Length: 396
Picture 1 (tube, helix red, strand yellow):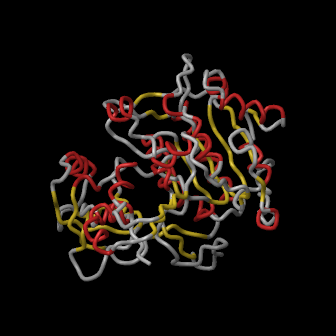
Picture 2 (picture 1 turned 30 degrees about the vertical axis):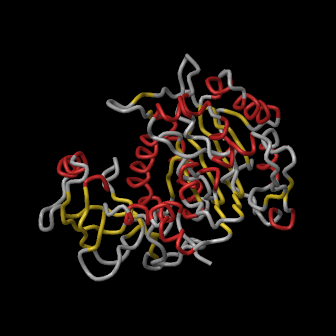
């Protein structure tokens, strides 16, 4: 049995042909470009098994002409299903509490709960509802030189809510904030980085670095818009970052201390380096965001001192978080305008992904009127159901 990423399988397709597999199984097949699947189907293949959910987000296509004219964003799995190919459907879910999963009935009418599993999802005493829409009429703004949007009021609300949950005993690692746009994600990350340490200190905890600094060879494209560096398997595979010393660079979130080595990294220098794209520099990084026990203080449940190096409250875009889950998910919808223009939030798959990430509680922050009045209708169904249940309001 050989396991590979789809990119690795395409790169080594000649090797696969020599190996002559009989069966190919593709996980998350609804997210994979059809061309990638074709590339790994050697003449020896007798059976192709595709596992995925075509009602969630499709493959990512950066070239809009290919997407709009040739439907490159339609996976082989979705195309075959829509053309009547017989298929089996998952009918039981073991992630979401029933109060959350029932709001997906309009997309998955036959979905049932694995009661033995979801009954163990403990309620959060700090929240009155497992699903809530916090109405906010903050104005959106488009980032200069970008197609991305931010909403300062929504960012402030999700940050305050996340810090409140931490202060009420929720493990920060059990909270995820999802943003509809990348620039909103960077804004929320920056606010949490500034304010989470103070919140933790008040609780007898402190946010600290994990391990000694590491020296790397890094391309400017590895620097995020908030001037931090996220090391992931994909980044390492792309050669945007490689270690200078012995051993690998552990995945995680890093601050840039020096770039080049021996020269303190300033925001202006990092922005220039980031603009350089593939320009390479030797730099010193330090992991950030691990929880440590303060002298005499407790350790948050599930976060032993020195454990993990990821940011304690993960902040991601909805698209990037597909396939992941957490106990509490806070969603900032961002779009808020008189035209009721939702941009890519008009795609119902995106709402499906955002709502189905939470195990115990999900809170949406957004302009209910703007979302409801869009002609797509899926936000109207979701928000309308919450209104009927008394789970929509201007205050939690």
